[in-house]
Each structure stands twice: as structure tokens, then as C-alpha cells.
Image (cartoon, rainbow over all chains, first blue to last red):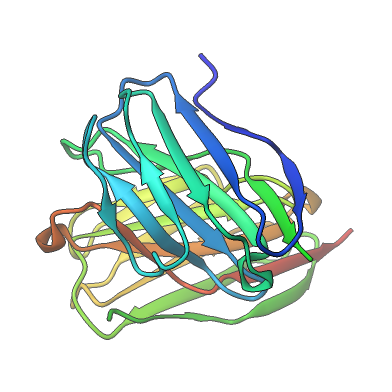
Length: 114
Length: 113
């Protein structure tokens, strides 16, 4: 039981390049989330999904797209990377019913855009 | 949007000391969660609180859900070097329907052996 996994762990992009971050969970959770964490700040919600085939905007969605084609996977895409998107990205999942409402986090992807 | 004020921002203590940190919100939450983040890792859940006034312990950690539902605190007793890390509070408002957490900005804890 791996929990929440993220790939890649590190990535460096040039401005204007695109990439996709992959999140996978093996807990059969309905809800999945993408957050970004910047120095001295808490985590901010980018996009989330309440089930397979659904996505919705969070607090800071601009410049990102997501897809949830399979229940266990949640992809975060950057179509044209900008230096302001340099950050650590965390994926999380939760059961979506309950309580409990706890969210479980992956280890993070450190992205640098030059 | 909702705001969570977490304090203190950082603490430097001696091993064996007790630690207290708290979060206050501008609005009501239904659930309070406390997470710890080690360097280079994702946040790990420490304690979850679901009822106003609830006091919950997990080993040396104790957390309380404030009676007004707008605040929570976390205490760590008899700190040890492995307590080093960043502690985040997070609140959940079920009314939004998205089960999304609002995070505090974190308390960075350093423990001197």
C-alpha cells in the first residue's frame, strides 16, 4: 500500500515549456487535490476532483489544467510554464465521505521554471 | 476568502520543553486538522478534530477544537529532536462541498538537543 505517489520528484523547465505532473493513489479515494507550496506560506489549492471524470477550480487555478480520467490518477498540466510557477506541488486524496475528512499527501514535486 | 492566522511563525526551544502553537480563523470551520511537514516531504496528519470543544491526544501531542469553532491549538510536551519540522493547522468547511482545506502559514519548530 503506497498511499499517494507523485512523479516526477524534481523538474526544471524553461519559460514557455509544458509538462504534466502525475499523482496516483491506491486507497480508492474519491477526492483528489493539487496544492502548491511557496516559501513561508501554507498550501494553496490549485484544482480538485470529487470523482472520476470531474474537475473543479480551487484558489489559484490560473495557468494550470487537470484531468481525472481514472479514479486513482489525477494529472496536473502546465501548458506554458512561467517563473511564477516555480514551487513545490503536492497532491492529496481523501475518501470524500465521512468523517473522516483527513487528506493524505504525496511527497511533492519540486518544479523550477527558469 | 477564509483566512487562517497561525502563530508563532517559528520557535527555537530546548529539548524537553513543552511547545504550544495556535490557529485562529475569520470564519467557522467544521473540522480542524494538524499536520507536520519534514524537509523534502509532504505533510503528515497528526491529529483530527471534529467537534467544538474536543480535546484529542496522540502521544505527546494534544490538540483542541475551540468552542467558538474559529480556533484550535496544538501542544507538544517534552519535546525531542525529531519534533523538528513545520507544523500546519488546516480547517475544513463542509459547506463548500469540495472538502478542501484552508491552511495556516505554518510554525517552524527547532529543538536544541
